[in-house]
Image (cartoon, rainbow, N blue to C red; front, top):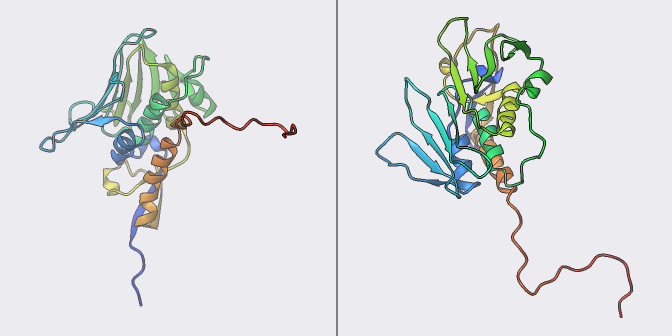
Length: 251
């Protein structure tokens, strides 16, 4: 009998703010392959440095046990001063990815200024001092000039992760981050569950499934295809005119 397909154990974890950081490739691979960001990492150093095609945005991933692992800097533009975003090691990659997907979206941003708190209100996050708090009271989103998103397991304990956004960060990018943060759908994790911030069943729900290795890889491939499809179609070759629509007679 031929051996069956190779399988891997996948934990589907909710809420996602307590699911751990996840696979950095969820962010770095699409930026390079689907969004055209160049990479300049040194293979002898444990860090990644990516630059946007217009050289206005720079993303650095550097393992730092005492600091923020993900750092994005964006240069000033005619309508906006320079801004930045920092993400701790255990910030779920799905949230960072949502933020960067909005940044790299080739379609123009909506003229209506987004409200980063609106996705949290829609998801039932309660009002708190200068912000909103998750239903399990572990995550706060606050603004005091800068924007902060902080997850802690207990009051006064060291944060599990924290995201920090400069005061000039575009609101629609913040709204993309908070929409992902408030998303109730679980996220997949294939690493050792001991790397989750907590296994407390009162805080975290885990559903373990055996999936084929091919299925596990499809998620990233589907993400690459979806992001690549956002690129505008290339212009028609010169001299070829589109056929006019309509039903008029021709001779």
